[in-house]
Amino acid sequence: MPFSKLGLSAPIVKAINELGYKAPTPIQEKAIPVVLTGKNLIAAAQTGTGKTASFVLPILEMLSEGQTQRKKRIRALILTPTRELAVQVEDNIAKYSKHLNLTSLAMYGGVDSKQQKQKLIEGVDILVATPGRLLDMYSQRSVHFEEIEVLVLDEADRMLDMGFIEDINKIIERLPEDRQNLLFSATLSKKVRVLAKTAIDNPVEISVSPDNATTPKIDQWLITVDKDKKSALLSHLIKENQWEQALIFIETKHGAAKLVSQLEKRGIKAESFHSGRSQDVRAQLLADFKSGNLNFLVATGVAARGIDIEELTRVVNYDLPFPAEDYVHRIGRTGRAGASGEAISFVSKDNFKNLCMIESRLGHLITRKEIDGFAPRKEVPISILNYVPKNKRK
Image (tube, rainbow, N blue to C red):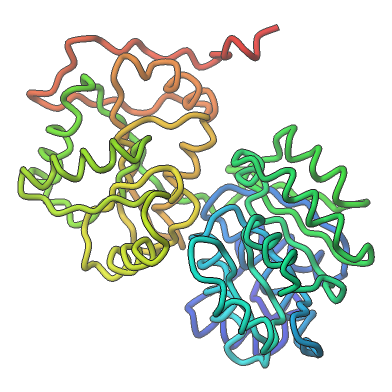
């Protein structure tokens, strides 16, 4: 089915055709018509299946007939958990609205607010914001909510995991009651459903399972290795296999800095990406990584949902994440837009419980490999697929 059959007008279809979009993904095909009817919606689909276009395209269609009439007022509000995701979503809005007379702004903390305030004064139709900065700007009367027609909670599960529930509730309390509400999430956990119940009346619910989604083609495998051999193993893989680029996930800022230093000693240039670095630095690192000027980016979980690189071929879990959902979001950075990708995880014996939870979440064991010279002294047992953490056992 072409996009033109979903109720989108010629200027929007022209923009997405110019971007190379051939046909809507399953989540787009299901969600766009619902949003265009003005109904409230709860939608779940895995990372990399096209959720952003599922709400942005119909919002552009609905707003295309008018513009923000007063300063500091907005017509659509999209809440996101991270700065990087806010920038990414707003970038997509700008591309999709190329042939429309609509304006948008990404608003987030960590940078001077003067430019954001000035843009709001000039007029913004669609605001993409992180909860904390939005509340701060609202308290300064730099933005007003009374003209909001649509609210989107994007990556709702991640926002709740990051502790934004109080901020989200404060924002919702200040919005006009007569608005459309859209919630998009990778998972519909209990916490997400509680939020949906309090924020969204009579929603349509859509869930696109991995079986019928446009599932990313990701070759997943793991290497069992002792903890103290991980950096040497990574260097070996980069050199032996002549990797051109990889996004490497690690758990802590300190660990990221240490790994970058270890790689540098072995002649491998890498940079660390985490919340401790300024927004300007992070933006430049992402730009360099996307352009290919930077080959290896060592990132903490802050980047898991904020990096959208269509041609990223490889993700490495240097440390296994917790909870298991974070694994799905991390590997979803590769294999995007129909491309194939590779996800490699380093697993030592002390990661066994995390591995069990991840493989239970996936519903299958991840292919194991051992690399000559890096066989672990401490054997990693085979996972228990029906593993249940102690805090969830009855």
